[in-house]
Length: 400
Ligand SMILES: C[S@@+](CC[C@H](N)C(=O)[O-])C[C@H]1O[C@@H](n2cnc3c(N)ncnc32)[C@H](O)[C@@H]1O
Image (spheres, rainbow, N blue to C red):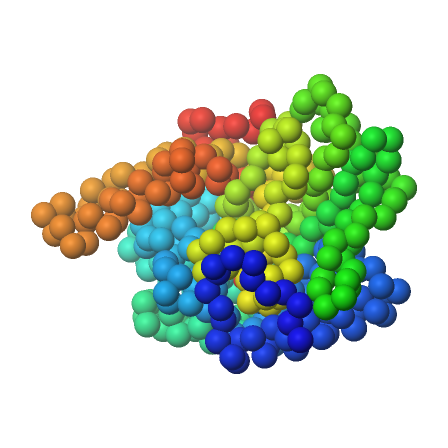
């Protein structure tokens, strides 16, 4: 049985989806039993999101879209408006030109909208490129990506390929939108005088959290100091995440990048802000039918689970490989610098049906109250001298 019944009015999934969730629940119970009754949260999150065929990204959930009625759970910038891809294409083009490279690689390509938009915009800008590789842990999304690209950028679809493994080296531009936040995190709890790790246990017919005393490792020690530095006040309990998967991923990508740039766009904060008292109950969030909530045990496999990105750690991981930090700024500043208002103004304002939704979407991408400030862009490079126009004003690398 599914132990994770909704406690409020969240819409119930259909029978097929429920059966998938129950199968995943059984699988996770088995893993918990095999781990002597206690599973670290990152392993739970990994199974809930990526178990083949059953996890949220491994299975058939609709995921991305604009409205709950579509059966989707959340909207991302490339889904919100094609202007996001068209604008991002400008710094991508500049990075290709400045590094004299001709290849693109996108991680976690979702529905394929960003790929289709970037391909089209780069061709419109007359930027020569040879290939667009997509890397996604979710095989299920490949068919959807292919369909989007063939529909929206048919003349360029032949340049796209899907990789099963990363090349040892890559020369070109890497892009990842909302990929870092989708990587499994451990949950750790600071209690007076001792650190605990929050794991998952089976309690009757439900999953529940259970805290175990742990010896602080290097990540926990770093966080321990960061909490004090950010607040200067003692905490009875501070719950947060460690981000080993995102750090490892950043190292892998930056090591692979022999020449060119890697852009990651995601929500989060530099370390000093991340560990502020405001976030003392962790940043882990779940998304189901466009409602954000904090119960990771609701319908396993049918909802997204995410955590904010700690960008100082990401910067250290990238720079530690010898890559340069190309820039770090808010999404609003990055898109403004890259010319999103010019891109919008290319549309005809008298074509109200097209112009108004586009203007509304741009407002969402830029607004401080929406995505403009919470979302950041961090970029690494090798072989690029100077900076890019998109980081020319308002670069916040010094806050990392
Ligand atoms: C929140 S979705 C974002 C999708 C898309 N980029 C967008 O903005 O609409 C996260 C995506 O990252 C993928 N992902 C997570 N970890 C990954 C990894 N290590 N390598 C490649 N893709 C990954 C997931 O499968 C999923 O497609």
